[in-house]
Length: 190
Image (cartoon, rainbow, N blue to C red; front, side):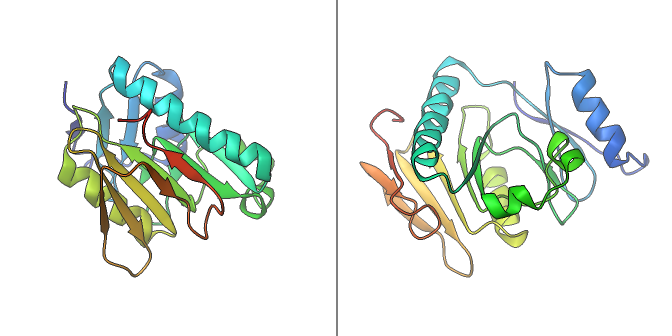
């Protein structure tokens, strides 16, 4: 199944209503673009889910050692400044951002864009749509993002005010100055 986009321009779906829609339909993954369209996302298959778990494991292991922020999986929703609601496959924010959130904000979709994120392209994802989503993250405050395409064995690296860099079949990918000393081992991801 491919992702399905529903035009909700005739409906004024509030943030609270969108949150309740997601909570009441936990078997589905929803996102919302900045125009308010509802995107129903297909669940991942076993291979993609397994690779997502490995990505989160590696990121969490680094973060536990460094204790610099909070790591989130693909179930975490973000309310971006543009009005979009997005859920990257893996993401990270520094402790300062986390600590500045209220207890209520921590319980709902986080009202910010993650500093770092990873999107793992699944067979049901559209490459152009996912690339546009990566650009949207940058426009909303993300500092570093990786789009991993297992099919082509490429990683697109997104940085603020820079051209997208394409790494072909890398053995690892560096977190640069955003996630210092973090290197994602790609062997278990391919």
